[in-house]
Image 1 (cartoon, one colour):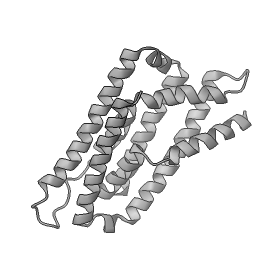
Image 2 (cartoon, helix red, strand yellow; image 1 turned 180 degrees about the vertical axis):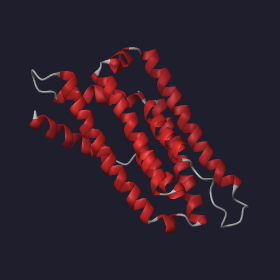
Image 3 (cartoon, rainbow, N blue to C red; image 1 turned 45 degrees about the vertical axis):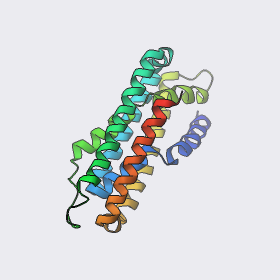
Image 4 (cartoon, rainbow, N blue to C red; image 1 turned 90 degrees about the vertical axis):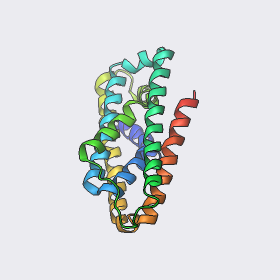
Amino acid sequence: MLTACLAFAAVAAVVTVTPGLDTMLVVRTTVSAGRRTGCLAAAGVASGCLTWAVASAAGLTALLAASRFAFDALRVAGACYLFWLGAQALWRTRRRSGAPAAEPDAPVSALAAFRTGVTTNLLNPKVGVFYMSLMPQFVPHGAPVFGTSMAFAAIHTVEGLLWLGGVVGAAGAARRALARPAVRRRLQQVTGLAFIGFGLRLVTER
């Protein structure tokens, strides 16, 4: 069992530290609203992943994978949500293009940061399919599937929190430089385009 957990932890760690939507979301939230709010966004991401992991262990995502309509509906909903986040970020930069240089961005509430982290993961069916396809490969023969899967889910959640906590720390340390008006506007543009790109990839990939 220990060998299986270590093997899963190694593979999950590689997936966790690969830059993607979650990292971009946490960086943007930390820069715009501070470390505490960035940590709550990271907690939301971890909560969404944990929910998918529990669903996978319970076999619910197998039903999702078996139903093409359900998978596509959730995928399109997730893409639309990412388009909305991207468009919102881009519109914010357009709206402030003529504003005074020192004008701050609208604050992000703690609840909104957590909710965004959860939603971006729950509306991505590929997270559930990832868990469903990866975790069974590491369950030792004869081991309880649900209990072992829960152990794997806990490992991945801890890894995700540690990684995103480091991202929050790094973004918080660089916040003064990144929060300068010109840099902040550019960051908003980059994250907006990235969200739209992630949405396009989600809706077009099979």
